[in-house]
Length: 326
Image 1 (cartoon, one colour):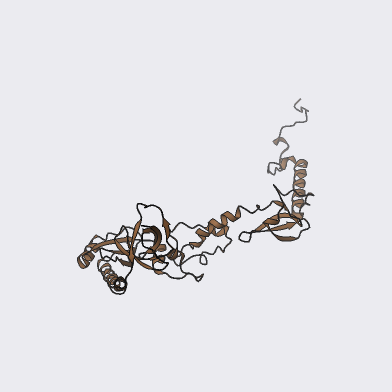
Image 2 (cartoon, rainbow, N blue to C red):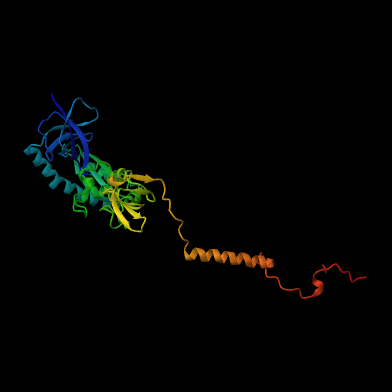
């Protein structure tokens, strides 16, 4: 029997993982019933299935297409059970005055487990809370602490670019994003404009950084002297995506060229004529010469001490060589 591997998005955290199955005809956006480490769940096909020539251990399994009965159970869980469980847990948190913020709840399709997601600044002792929930729902209770990026992944929908959040659609792991990535892509460095719903730097800066890094390798560095059939000049700027470089020409003009037009790259810019020093540089050197000449003419002032003339002739010994004591 043919085996297939297919990507499925499931759970409140919109986790995307590969599953194996022998079901044919699966399509993107189909609702399926799957087996995971947590139990029986439902999910949505997020990528077309691919043929699998061997069985891979550790992968979950797609059990079947979701039937009309399965869809009814899913709707009942989402519209009735989960909202009621969320409200009850919030009530118990207030009664016990726990320092935590409840974000969401996930009731598995099989009913074997209910998972509560919360935010907190540090560790929270929720053992008594778990006992209250277990007594009420007679099932396994899991409390999972998450961060602000996970909260946005669960609750937010569209980013200000107009597209659905990357973390909800195709990103499997939320990896760190740095300001260096924003600088490489020459975006604005205003955090309020490059931050997502979570208040952190947008995830697209992370996965697009790979493309920018590869494209930058093809461009000559700033300061290089390049030649084309029409121009010769120094590289002063880049357009990474378009693979263009801005040249400062020998005659002072500027020109954008594509890297395919470059015929020769020199190691460093070698000026054909020595540049004339600026007025400030010449003035600074002239002041240094004047100060040096003044110190040579007045050695006593070299140490910075202003010595006054002696008040009494006998204050210093007579160095003339005449001895008046005779």
